[in-house]
Image (cartoon, rainbow, N blue to C red; front, side, top):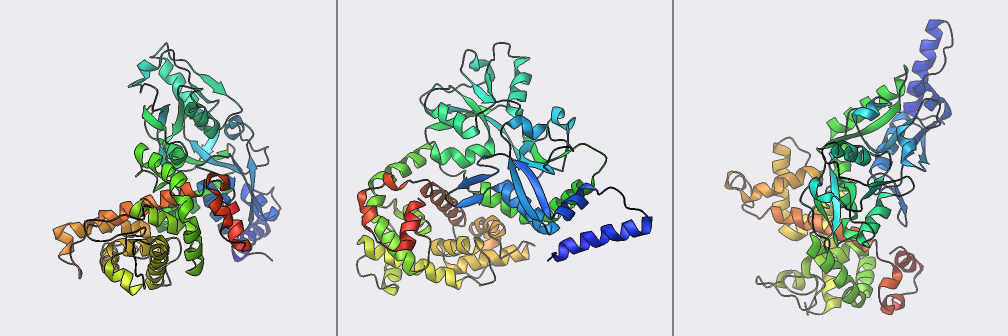
Length: 473
């Protein structure tokens, strides 16, 4: 059955055909509607399209899927075998357009028709911390650098070479960003170049790597359509992106995929992985059981615990909170925790308390915003969260969207604003950093393999659901 959106577009096409008295060749939009499928050319990359144990996801995957939904058609992806395929799209190809994190460059504008950009990135030189950090392009002479052929990275290096004659590099036609970054991590390459959003997403996997410097000015990212006289599908894409921008959906997608990966530094990432090896195996059973009892994701619960105590069962703060989940006396009593330093009790109490925060968030608020706001309440208190949501609404933002509320929480520390609130002063920046870190810890927990934890993990439970979760680590 045709969707309402698709019926609308087909009706317009038929009406135009009847009025004109002839049947013209179908336009690019009509071809998509007639076949009931949008075909998108993309690439495997952390910032665009990924297939892993969690399924298919990625910024471009979600963005283009929303466009197909808007048109009322299905979506199919073609994965480019080489980067060159992306920049050589023509009207003769099977794909309708390219959605692969392509930056708009003067050379590409001669070959492709770009939509208005939807975000910006900067090219960054990545190095291993044990390698001397270069301070400028001039210091790269004699270095072993490799980038992907036909990318804007290679294009930019050629531009830099005009003023730095000794700059040299290798261009690979069959490598991915992850593969080149891995080679730098293993000291096989001295450096490579990545986009800033790519490095944000993969840095947790490579704590020994860092950014030496930006080697380009910010570049605009957009969808790319083949050149030609038919702009019907292109025009729909432009309207769609403008609508997403005006409604805030585009910003929410950007925050979901890129907005939380900037907080952790080298030391923080290394410390996390060390504790994942030494502390997590002793606690993972408790995380699974408590999460299952209160209908939570165990990775969320473990991430919150790590943010609170670094999984240190003896943790005590100057304010009197203590244990794995750093519970106050009042909260512990409310959750029937008699010994806050007992890991099982602490995790059970923390899971119980977090579940009550989630239930208290209005049901109309959708995930993941619902969970992030619950965590803010867990960290700063429900009253202060409500103050921030009221400020958000007063300033024209959406109080049901975390991306809007997180911008107002820091205002609770400013006298101009907190004196107008019901609950007064609060360190509003803390829950923002808190949740950014938790989101990063969740992402890193997803990377763990079953054999990276002790055998204790395999003795937890024979429950089928639990076993599936462990295999997905």
